[in-house]
Length: 135
View 1 (tube, rainbow, N blue to C red):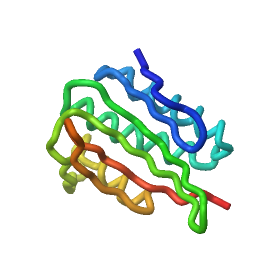
View 2: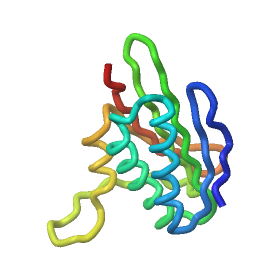
View 3: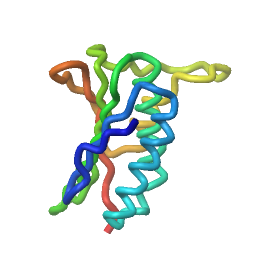
View 4: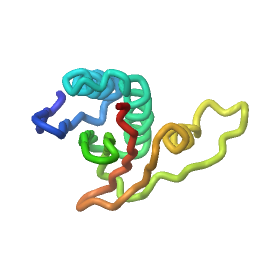
């Protein structure tokens, strides 16, 4: 079951179970919030990157997966998206061989976002990325 923690104002936050359906549900929640904010133009790339990070969490961690989006206005409007899970180990980017089925998710995040990174959390870690908000 999805846990909607907050979807008011400039931020939205959800918790998803460690279940394969979480990927689809997270994409839908993110797209819906972007529509609410009038940021439909960021829907495809945001949903893709959230999908990659939630999938990574499902593969490597057990427990709930958190997704948070923060819309920051100002001189450089941006969208910050965070995906958290209970595994403390940071993700490792690797170079996938041409015949491998996986191993490209973090490269996709790095190349599609303005900035990205990881940080430890009280229990686990958070992987985040930032996108520029179109004018």
